Length: 320
Image 1 (cartoon, rainbow, N blue to C red):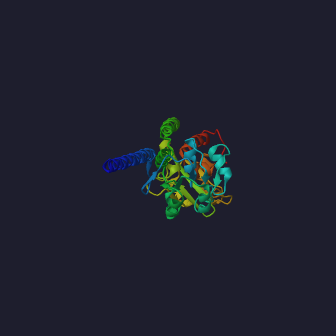
Image 2: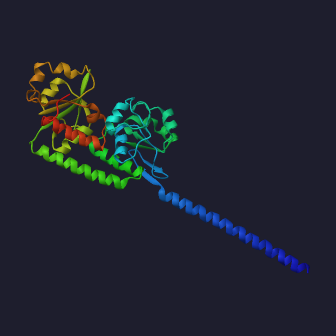
Image 3: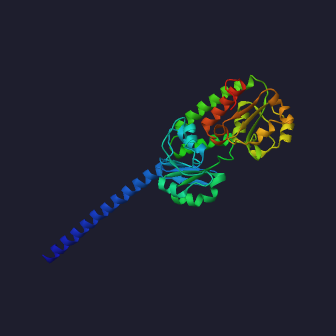
């Protein structure tokens, strides 16, 4: 009798142990499925300084350069925060309409407290401006670093594709790039019909004149369209130029971007040397929007620069 009871007790304990073990296996299996699912959603992004892994496509994105904001908007994603240099009107110009976002201060020195307050799941930073604060940004949210300020046009297209991957919009990016390539090809045909033209793009400040070379964003847009850039023998995107050097280059067309009422070119234009320039004599010196030509640097601004250049040359719009 005692033996039977003992046997029952052993069997009962064994059964309970088996049930608990089974429950434990189920829990482990569920965790494995969840982990596999999470890994399936993870995205590894290669940027200019390394790799960053996101648990899933980003939805709340902060842009610390205007080109990154443009890329997001082109993909149908509104950035939750932008380092807008305290210029909301520039962001309205960029998007073609007003939209809601959190201003994050200057691009050069973005406000880290405001970025934290925005609670992003991705920060897009510039390699020239923000590498020094990368560790601080990483503490707020995963951060990818791309090349905007000193990047070329080709690099801006690469950045667009990287951003598209980060937000899960690769198919949309492929379609947009295909559309963009067709727009640029159509613009190039119009330039080719003009014959060879040497152009120069410069930013005029009170104390200097910085030219955008063929290695710059705007300069490379011009060469992509079929223009010859006046400065193409350098790896630097920007070089400072004197009036004397400008006379030796003597481009056919000059585009001047400035928002400085005391720009140095105002004085240059009064000199006989300037008036003897080929572009000046043929009325091919144009004052252009600095935001569109040199600050926005995204996929859409490239198209605007190209069309704007042709409109100026063909007399469809007047110089500012």
